[in-house]
Amino acid sequence: MCREGKLRDALSFWKDNPNNAGAVQLLQSVPTSADGQGIVSTSKICTEVEEVMWQRSITLSAGLRQCLIERYIKSGDLGAACRLVGELKKERMGNDVGVRRIWNPLLSALGKQRLPKEAKKVIDLYYLMIANGFEPDALTYTRVFRYLTYQHPHNTHPHPHY
Image (tube, rainbow, N blue to C red; front, side):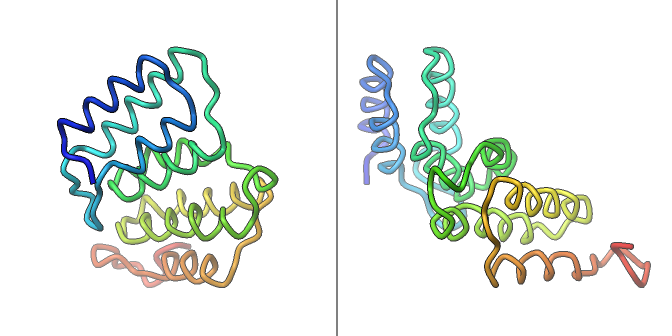
């Protein structure tokens, strides 16, 4: 794992000649932990990479988009992950990789929040996944149904999602 100073140096070097492959290598060197508390802000590094690519009019490759989404999920920045996930296509990455590494972890992370307002987002992501050509697996269905059948403690209605 990189130390923060070395990571900043690598980011500065990459900014001089930005490219998809270099960005993926850079992001993979950013330390993260299960609770999203890395040595440096993973989400901030991801945002910087996105901004540089956008400023230089460089299209994000499927591999870089996948890496950014994975890092955003691990850092807890689910809004950024949801924003990027819309352009993922099955034919660019394959169904198995897309479902296992992107869609299921994102649905799971949203589900852990257990907020009633997130139910629509979970359903929207599920339909977006299908619209983009991905086929749900058993874990996908489990995550979606578990979320939709969860009754929030503050919801006193006997059927919270009807």
